[in-house]
Amino acid sequence: MSDDFYEILGVDKKATQDEIKKAYRELALKYHPDRNSGKDAEEKFKKINEAYAVLSNEDKRRQYDSYGPEQFNRQYSEEDIFRNFNINDIFKEMGFNVDFGNGRFSYGAGGQQGGGDIAYGLKLSFIEAAKGADKTIEIKHVSRCKHCNGTGGEPGSKVVKCSICRGAGRVRRTVNTFFGAMQTVTICNDCGGTGSFYEKKCKECRGKGGIVANEKVDIKIPEGVKDGMRLKLDGMGDYSKEGSGDMYLEIQVAKDKIFEREGDDIHAHIEIPFYIAILGGSVNVPTLDGPKEVNISQGTQPGSNIRLKNKGIRRIGSNYYGDEIITINVEIPKSLSSDEEAEIKKFKELRENKTQDKKRFNFF
Image 1 (tube, one colour):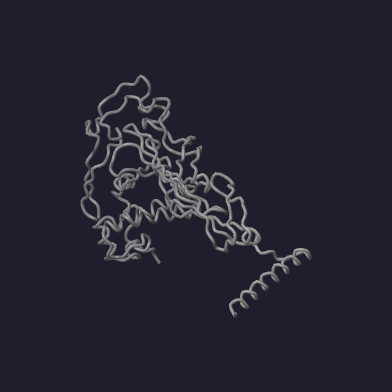
Image 2 (cartoon, rainbow, N blue to C red; image 1 turned 30 degrees about the vertical axis):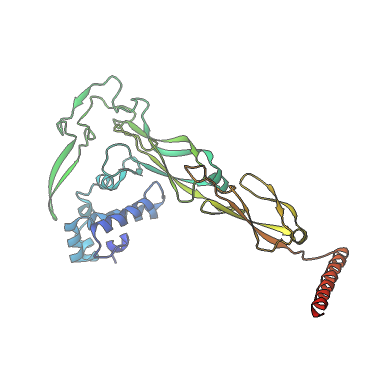
């Protein structure tokens, strides 16, 4: 049984083009080659594109709805489905920058010329997110070609006008298909949309101006970033002769064994001996800056809280700090020595006698 294109994209059969585009964008980001490897992911990505190639085109969609999945796939080949469907152009319109020729996939501002934006998932510890950190990461992106300095031309080569687009940078094509006549305006492949090119292309980047490479980048993470936050790093995306794209750091904060975050406040639990809870005293509590000595009041009850002002997390872009809230748990010993047991019994007797005296006093 053939796969249903609507089910592949997770949309209703009455879905609008905006809903189809939104679903496709989310799935394309999730399954694109930079984030997945293996045949299963490749096949999933291919099916997503196949579904969108049909459902995003009103004529193809009408044919698909009319014939149904099985009949449509028997009648139309993969070549028919993808005819006049330029994945690179489609992705650029939606905010992606794709070059399947070199295995690159990134996303950026829709419809703009220039290098694409890229995303990088950065894992941080709780302390790194709270206090900030200097990190060195390795990214795979299109970097400026050193041989031609990003121009795309072999050093010393002359600039000539493109004879295909006559300097316009775009070409218009009309193709007759079984869906009818389709007219498209695409970027000129010969000049890459510039309208001109170097007489001799750079032997290293083949005229693109950039080369896919792994590059180490030093970045500074500000205090107070949260899990799921995205940080924009200007100009650190894919290089293009029209301008470099940006890089978006997708922050992933690991859970901590001690601290939990709630807004700008942090929470922690400590256990104190029962005698300190009764008598009071001082104990060390964990903070983001290391252990800190605090006073415990006499008669502190289990579940009581201690608030440490300005010991929480700094709010990004301000000098405001949240608080740290310490929850007190009272530790009850599971076993006692004979001496300890004797002392506890004395305490018990004192408390009982005090209670009895109080009752007699109240009686008279």
